[in-house]
Image (cartoon, rainbow, N blue to C red; front, side, top):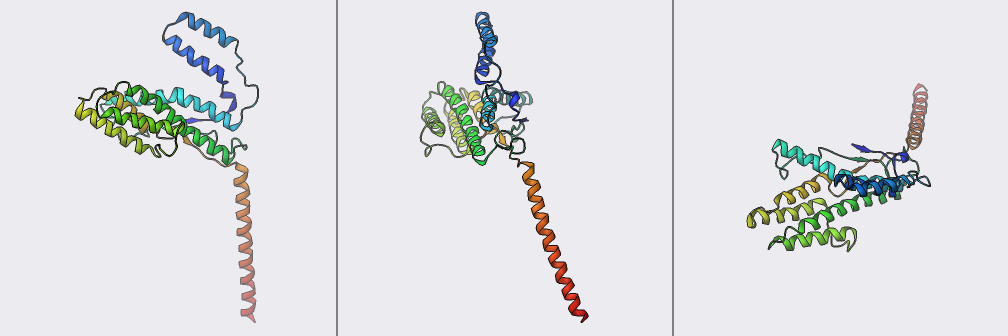
Length: 258
């Protein structure tokens, strides 16, 4: 699955927020709220006032990663594993569904993408994964109030928080570090607390295994003109070398004839 960077595919932020609230109102069958949101949507501009920058395009698509794909992909995989009787902890194919991400890396589609923008988008992809995990861990901590596991979950929450909002020196560098701490908390649940709320813990571990610390793979493509120039430059040097070699052979041949 690849998320592309075409600017006409994006709604402005206010429209996305209304659609999010509208979905919840529909699920709750809240007819008065649905009516108000539809009226608000009808009066809200659907077009951006200015052409989005490459970073704007990336931020808009990251909204979908955070609010749609994070839950949809993990939910789909969890249901698949449940129907097939596969243990989510020992499951060996967490990359079954991979998400490619073009904004911020596709220089061929948008020559205005710079190395600085690529780095900014990479950081935002990392940050959104931490934000998603932070929300889930806060919910999970409300259930895991048992001795031994509560202190560990508090430590995990603090380190995830620092990854986005706090001290960057006291956070996780790799997803395997987070999975290791979650695995320790899971072991305490199983061994000391009869596996209470184990399904919630396993669901979070599954999400971390699927998305890691990047949410999506940032696809890097160079602008096609650069490839053409590089090819011509290489061919030019190759031809110069070949011509020089031929001239040396000719001089050597003339000396042999003499």
